Length: 193
Image 1 (cartoon, one colour):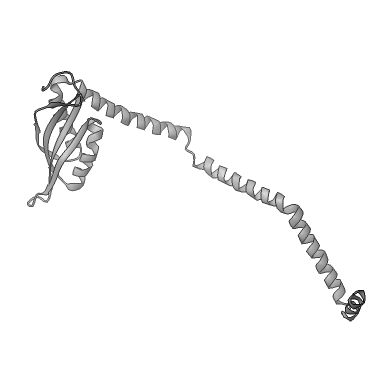
Image 2 (cartoon, one colour):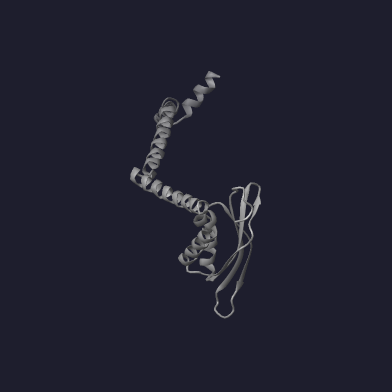
């Protein structure tokens, strides 16, 4: 075996020996780098990615003054909702007129015209006094939809809307809305106002 290897080496051109030796040294250096330095290099890359993601997270975080302004706005919205609920609940016998005033103000704010608000006979349902109303309004379609969505904010969370019907008015190009609105207040032991 050794003789065959010697014969093979004697047949190789003398100029290829330094090239083969240089290739062997480069291969060993590359393999050594991969074995010794690959783990620290991978850790460095991972740390760099973590640092970059933290920088993005810190940059995206709002400043305390912006967060404070946002909290003040949220508090104002919550306060308005609570005030709407307490105003209706504390009105007592005037709850109907208070609701009518609130509906009228909300409709005007959205550019709508209330055609009618008709209170119906109230009744006690599951410990709550249900005061139903027939409401009719007219105006443009999108403001009418926005008004419907905002009713919960302006009247509080103690209302429900049912049986609504939307019809187009041919002559004016506006939309007419009819709905049944029920206001629920804690029962005070009385059956009807």
